[in-house]
Length: 323
Ligand code: PBG
Ligand code: ZN
Image 1 (tube, rainbow, N blue to C red):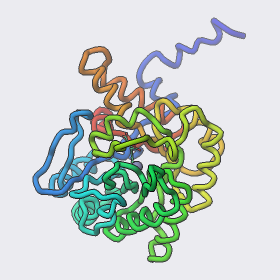
Image 2: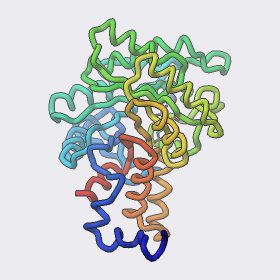
Image 3: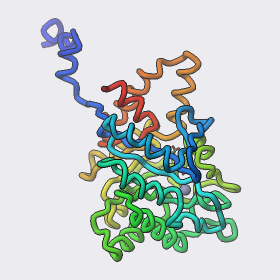
């Protein structure tokens, strides 16, 4: 029994009926907004590779975070632009660093906005690598204790959730152990469990001033060709104490999100990264794409693939459209 008895168009005749049968929804509560925090006062400096995104000092960041909260967005993800860098990224653990100060200020001034901090050394090392470098090799095990110290310093300053993005083996366990020892049993770890060595991070490296001085990140980030490997990354992170698992980038890896959604019962996040954002913004500016529409379409695609939450530079714009 087919046409004309079945007519899929019957359920598409007007917006009310379309909304009633809609399978996937977008809500600002599913969004997390990434922000860059730098030293100083009164700073709001646009990032040229990511129009509409800024370096904020703590005071201006707090004001911006209020408007993020008022749009119904669940949280912010903080990246630090430190005042100084060295070989081992010492400033990452500075209790007076921009991220730590921002955690304190947000905790004090903006109620019920989740403060999530990115944990990785590449913004803090002089060579721009995510770990300790020895003979041009990124050393795994010596990096773990630095990452754990960085995460602890964020949590001590008031971070609600820590998000390790470094892709060193064993880092979730190292962070979980340090948090347990220091009485932070209830701080969730949002692990960048499945993070690919992607060219889509290009605009971010300008934003975070974190481009590697030599080499690349392929010795720790995943090969874009792999999907079975993601299962093992997720299994080990869950075992080490991660609470939320992330896939990154999002748009080019929707199959990975779907596969993990079908296989694991944990909350899944996806990061729509800087290159995904900037490419759409650029096409919109050229008049080639309708930006508000492709923005929502890209986000619904990520949700439809199975992500519970989306980290996105579109968080504010999308929340405004949805309101
Ligand atoms: C740090 C980090 C990166 C991103 C998030 N955390 C850059 C990288 O791994 O080179 C990328 C975010 C984006 O492109 O929006 N390790
Ligand atoms: Zn890094």
